[in-house]
Image (tube, rainbow, N blue to C red; front, side, top):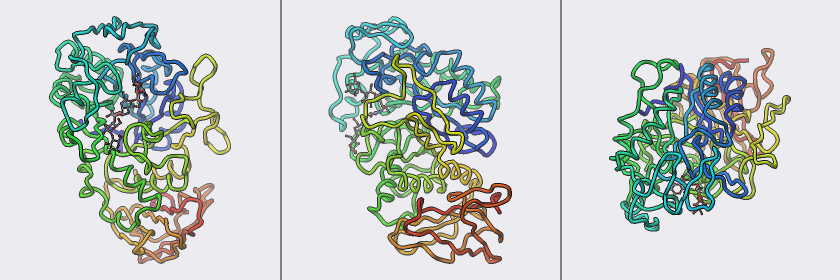
Length: 479
Ligand code: AAO
């Protein structure tokens, strides 16, 4: 349950936050497949409460388990999973089963279902009063594990997963999407559910679909949202026997580093031993859909697309470093943290428009996953394979470099001074194209060329004023 089931040696998933299913399928075929991405996390797929002004977070207020949201219906979902699997890109679904909606009157869903929220009546499932935790209470004290798991998170009506009937409805829903060909799930608010209940639910899930190309007896990839920055009753380690856990400390600490608050030299032993989970238990990111806009945990150190140089550097480090299973965020532009995705006046989500010249997105979609530097680091990660970090170098300050075995080499400069240094790259001799400043076109490098000598040494030059502060070379990109 900790294996993302990436095809061949692919790696890294992208969260296409709020994208429509048809657009995701197109993106798998025209970009993610060819570029080597391993998978996509899609926003919650089951019917949600329609809220005034359509904030993005209405999708975290389920009204039923029908696949029907602003992203599409069950048939467009099924078609997307098929089309993405066909180009070796896996689909992961964000599952919201800790709770149903909060109070709303009237409560009408994206699939036309209605509910009487105050009496906890959700006829489209159906769920009724007895399926929810009682007595009704709200979470205020994170030092009390029972309160965190049995009371309501922000007024969201809290399902009781110890009830057989509730379990059966959740299992039915997840099995339905397994049979449609998904490879995994993000378990929203896993911290707010008891590990023993999740264990029972997970144990009742089908194997992955052989008909959709998964090897026999493959188990669903499970990664759970358990925010644990220390100092609360619930520990991330309580969930690691069940699947992976999203390691929130990762992006918080790296954000602090790349904002210039800590010297990069201290990243030498990054990974286990930093209060982080063991690598094989962790799913990591620089930011997510919550903490990029001040929801959830992370606060001021989180880096987002709004600080592009630092964001690209932190993402480059994430993808160059062997720790964890990596996820890249793909956002829409916002100033108001509640605002939903780009939509027309009827509330229908707009498809991202792609600039044919630059390959970047327009009309409100940021598409970090298409930024040249990030997309190239995804390739770097799959070339690096499982090779260890070798040839670590630092200037005793904010300039660092390392190789991944003899496949790939990266240098980062977060200093006020230029980085100009002969460094051991670990790579075979040759001329390499720096994939950050350019690419190989017609056998020519459009960016910086780096010459590695017979001894594996190359002269590395990253001015303090450079647009990106990163240089990355790897085998397969000689010029
Ligand atoms: C909306 C409205 C609410 C309204 C509600 C019901 O905003 O005002 O009451 O509807 O009508 C999303 C939005 C919510 C939204 C909800 C439903 O973020 O604003 O509520 O949809 O529409 C906790 C949970 C975590 C959760 C996170 C947001 O543990 O599971 O809050 N994330 C997921 C999703 C998220 C979604 C939901 C869950 C609900 O990713 O998008 O909500 O499905 C501490 C705890 C954390 C806790 C945070 C925030 O963090 O540790 O567990 O996260 O507080 O409450 C330091 C500490 C750190 C602490 C942090 C913040 O950093 O070290 O531990 O401070 O205090």
